[in-house]
Image (cartoon, rainbow, N blue to C red; front, side):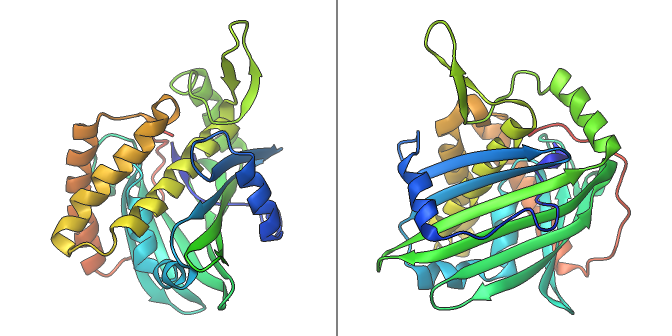
Length: 294
């Protein structure tokens, strides 16, 4: 669903200290140092992933400061049909995401969303990358993605990945239809209660959707860090295999496509992405389409 996109109403995200990240990670329900949480406020939803990763901070900072890396990361998501980047005045780069249905279709049939990328903090002890955009289809607005990273010893780093967006009237109506139909049985990761058999009852609705997608983007980031040093000819197939493997650990929440389908269509879509990157991006109107997925 288009709400996988990245955003937040200005001022909602507040900076806190890495000690709180470690506390969140320590309370993880997963078998890895990772936590996913969400919050909904009236017309805005925020999703956050906290993680400890086995990459030295200087290496991680070098990779995640590059707009090309972000396009490779977000592309792995099944709903992102392509991502292109270019330098722009007043920011470090501009990114254009083509977002659509989870099944294959060319970027021309997707929604184009433009994001500005800025290195808000770039020091020896902290990295903060901000991607933000004003609007999207169906009244979504105030997109904002913030990645923060700090060193954790010599060989590890701590991450916090946060994203959210605001909804207009049309977006709220479209979400209501989605959650009553295709998204009815989809859930996130936060356990709200337990049923009579003692099984967890997970958060659903908009919060569940944001938790699914912040997890997908975090696992895409992990995939990129693990595979970026491979020879170019091996990188794409290895990335697709690894992303599917990582997301399928959480198949109940994240499985949307079968492995072979995902890999085949992503290979097609990557061809479009390269073609778009080699051509000069030009502004395009937002199509009035609400793609399925998420």
